[in-house]
Amino acid sequence: MKPDEKLNKILEYLGINASEFAFKIGVKTNQAIYDILKGRTKTLSSSMIDKISSCYPEINRIWLLTGEGEMLNSSKKDSGPLINYQTGVPYYNVDFIGGFDIVLNDQTITPEYLIDFKKYNEATCWCNVSGHSMEPEINNGDIIALKKIEDFSFLPLGEVYAIVTTNGMRTIKRLGPSQNPECYTLVPTNKSPEYGIQELPKDMIEHIFQVLGCMKKL
Image 1 (cartoon, rainbow, N blue to C red):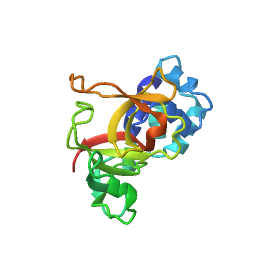
Image 2 (spheres, one colour; image 1 turned 90 degrees about the horizontal axis):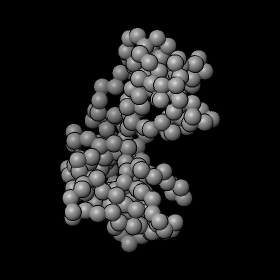
Image 3 (cartoon, rainbow, N blue to C red; image 1 turned 90 degrees about the vertical axis):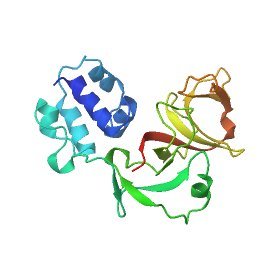
Image 4 (cartoon, rainbow, N blue to C red; image 1 turned 180 degrees about the vertical axis):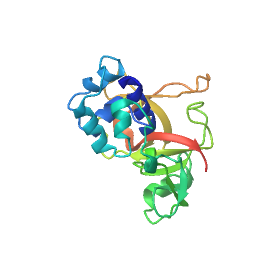
């Protein structure tokens, strides 16, 4: 298996992009990762393998070296999402568009259960989705893993975010650039004429969460 194939499998398993992966494993420049993905790197260096193994010990080191066997160590294979009551990320049975304010404003609220899903366990919480503007990427009735961003002075564009504005609006959209440097654009996935690109002033963002992933309710 070629290095680019290995890295693509790792990124798919982790649910992150190349720049996030570079940051997490401590690579000083993203270029080393992009060189692997573009097929310029013919073998993974021992230094790169050490960084990956140190950050993600569940990834089989033999597989990194040779491409043989399973990507994950047998004891660490991801069995998929599981309902748990001791470990995992809290799931709140509320809609982000509708009732998510109780999660934000009442820290005593109890989650319905925990979802233990390894590749999304860095999330802050899971909650429901209502609406059709992000279909087919995110469907009405799906649940989404949200990671709260505390410092949103700089937000990577092209990612999907769940946004709460200062006037109480809640929306899930892909964040895009605007010709106005004081604004972002909110880009729906659904190309139906009823949905369109909107501008959002940056200073109207009160809370923002990165949408790490989605799935059907367990």
